[in-house]
Image (cartoon, rainbow, N blue to C red; front, side, top):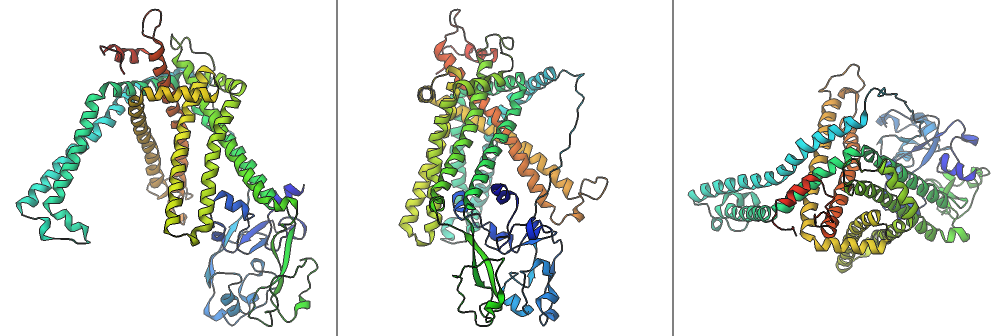
Length: 602
């Protein structure tokens, strides 16, 4: 019950709970300056600080919804005559000038009220009538159209557009160079200047641009010419990934399940960290709110007190003396080991989150691998491949997934500790220490990226062969190194396609939301009119961020499918030769590309 009270009911600055006891009619918490709560983005530092917001907090009945300023005529009045007493520190009786100068309640005469409150979520149930449609057939046909008419041309445009862009750039640089050469504008006439726009008016600058762009264009053309077969294979794999997803549409919904599990991990970490931070009893001290008033110099915040029995008359020499909540008790066995417990909690959170992501990758890899290794597609594809992949991962591969997640977690913990040390010692660092810290953070960032790449491919091999993590990671790494050129080409082409796909989705929704919230698209009613919104760009930012997260989740399935089919394709080439005894399992599209080559591609 105590834990639930700490989690469900907020406290004010004196340590009293809001919504129960004497504050039963005041369930909400009013923060004088909510921006002070966002002092750091470091997870460990926030947990070690006990989640205490360094601003005055009061229990209030309802949220303030208006703004006002202290007028010049109000400076001669008392605080009770000017301010709403339900939003001020209790038993505060000062002049307005003293209140403003001491900044007891507000940061400046012109201030805004910020408020945090919890509200109930409303759930709306929508019933769709789809019994008369065959959803699977419709989805397969839609994805087949997408694969035939969009993926192939889009992949080619990703290659053609940079070539055309550089051609236009070469022409423009040559045109500018010719004009300035005709005018005899040279860099020797200018010399050195800090106005860089001047350098754009000389022929040497455009000649340098012309040479650089021409070299880049030559590199791109040579790459396309000599790697054309591998680029065609990459395009074919991307098209094959669309077909695979069309036969298992439920894979597009799996990111939602992963998101729910991640929310559970975040909730567990938050509740545990909050319980640890509030494990000790509240400590109250006698503090002078305004040391310049009366004889308050003797009150230095070292005397303990109880807010229920505190008598201000005992400190008549200091009218602003109050019993204020300072912190939670840090004495005792649990409190002395609070730092270590918070570290364990962060490690557990990262481990659980990485395990959930690994479980999703292994599940999707198993589903898409079952598609590739089906000899007669789609007849040999097993029923419910995503569910089957999920059950296999839970039954046979939990240990391997947990081990891979642990390796990644250890690296992430080191990065968090480096950020924490850098945050605590930034003011005392010299140039050499800052350089060393920057190098360490960069090295561990690269190490984390490499381990994520290795783990991802190891999980694919685990889903295919069912071997342990170490063997799968070794086999995946050696397989990729034997086909390093294909890996680079496929990775870059896929990244460009997914980037343009996300850009298309996010940009389209962002443009529509701009026209919607700015009032350019008129709808019945005045709810979303621009004149009724204080800042119409804020909902646009929220919509764009939400769209990006959703698009990232769905495109991550596509990316996982491409990576899985690629490893299966490499395994197929090394294990089989296309004969009757060892036929290829690849699709007809990939088979055509291989048959066009006179020899087996390397």
